[in-house]
Image (tube, rainbow, N blue to C red; front, side):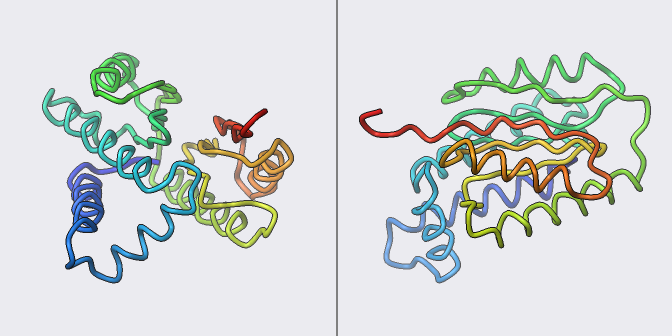
Length: 199
């Protein structure tokens, strides 16, 4: 999904401040709720905070070079794995986005899912937003899926998933939910299996 840097960066920085505030005694209820959710995620509180930091630093890299990456490229980070999505008519932007992402400390992998396309309309964007909302809802209300461990992005009808699945059956179930949604053309999963202790 396309993201506009002014809004996205502001949100990322706000969350970073909220997480940082937890070390003091003035943590507000909303920050506490955010941490409560992070605590039950597979990546934990520190992992989520680190991912948010990495995302903010990548977006900052994009702003610094003065390219139009921020309005065409979406960035999601989970466990240091960076998922780049979006659509552009210039393949050089995609290459630049990947190179800049690798410059940020803590990045373990860069998954380049940026589409090179001639045209993306407002209708496509609206449909993608609708698809993402529908899938998030389905994952949230499915008691057999820990939805908090999944991140969803949709670009031109292609759904991208990243996160951690408790088992293959859960991941398959999440993919099935996605494929059953109207306007979805394809589903690409970068969800990894949970590591079993002693396994």
